[in-house]
Image (cartoon, rainbow, N blue to C red):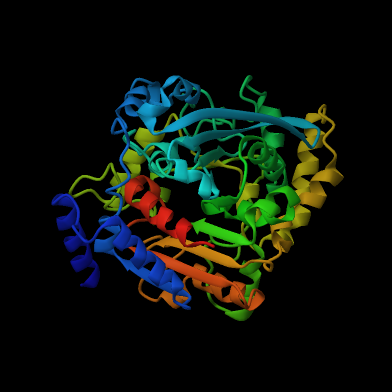
Length: 469
């Protein structure tokens, strides 16, 4: 009953154009008051969240970028074209950044869309480095599912932003082949297509250490000053691993800001030991291991399980979650990669007991291919499951931002069973003097709240950023 009442109330507010529930300054004070409380979690009421963002106005209303996206096949516009748009039209200066780096004796490309805000106050705050999770890329954080202004565009009105696509997940012009087609492979190099055997070897050795090598190079070259590393979903691992890289750690300054980020993989084993019988955010222990070189491909049924909801831009009255997922697949089938390397999932859970099988599969692939690239198996082996040993101390401020209906990270019926709550308790034990907080946006947003309510989410994050000391 409470859910139906909440949805009815919020829907009425949305149809009425939002809630008049206080000025931006007053709403920010509410966020700060919640974060000031020495509580593991607090919730910002839905009517307050939906009233956020009135001061996040794009100079042209976002029309220029939307037109660019709508003119491209599948919405996969060339980010380099953003550099041609006057900064005054956007509210920020756009720069497309590509860094090539060598790892495991192979070249890889990592990309970032740098949005330097025209607001002179932005330089007072850390850069927000937003990193995509599985099967996503820059588009998801820059435009919504209808190519309207996205989270990054709103954030960049007041903060400096770098939206990172991890290696392989961005391709100029997108992917034209069907999602299930085996030729739909990651674009590990942007200037050429790779033979299928080489792609499969790369899929199998796609470690977090590899991604971190490129991420460190990209961030240090294209940003300055303090940082927040915001890793969505699987890339939450990257935010914690960043503290092992001195040049990044010095800029992070003991702070962590998460959005659907979770915590380091080692915490899964801690939860299994301390709370036996509890299923973690990934559904518990892994079953039989899949082939590393075969990509996990998205489908509508997967998006129907906790990823699609009433606030999705593609939702129409009467749609089921499955129907929303089907529309999503149709709309994003070109510009969104829609695949994920199995090793990403393995390193994101407590599956390090399968390290031997991982090594065996990689060795078989290298032998089958003849390994003309000279990939050193020992170099790969030492990097495997580095997420199982990430340090959890050394923090002074931690905030997870969570959507009320993000089932991967929150349990609205029983919050103390939520994954983020367990993480917060562990981080408090290991950082007794730190401020460790969870703030829940109490609206029916999902794991993809950044495409559901991007303007409001940007304003909420701005308030959280300004709380950090």
